[in-house]
Length: 206
Image (cartoon, rainbow, N blue to C red):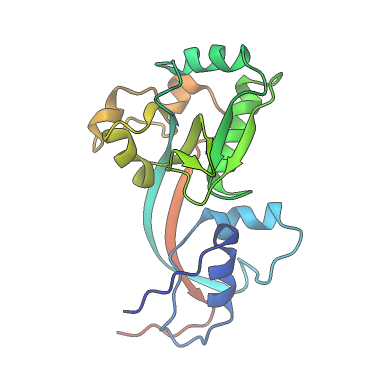
């Protein structure tokens, strides 16, 4: 197996590459909802068609989002975060891995639900789990649990909530956190679904 990391544009770079590859069963993409579900709604044009150019091969994982803050943010739950942010309009930001990606939309949706009168800025970074980029610090983060839990476990991020309908038993630190329907009150169960699509018409190989 040869892994080619074709990053960029929330997975659109990799999706374009796979959509134009030979339909011989040798090239598949490990992708998520960014390129295959969100991109058609946020990009005016795409060099591929998520419906016509791909065939699903297998579902790999689902990872709910964790709502986390930098340890310097003096809050311990969602209610305190909302109050803290409302008292500081325009001063807080949330980290995103790319414009229009799942973490970006989750942050906007959370802001529209709880902070309609506030100005909360997004801070784009290559890896949303990192604490800094170019000297600017992100205060708030929505990101997939698979990528973020390690930072929570080692104390570099402080988790406040999980976007799943149920608590995640496999993550001990997150068992005590409120789930989205229970306490976060958002309308959407955000998260990252990852799967392996191939170019439509590919022939499976043993």
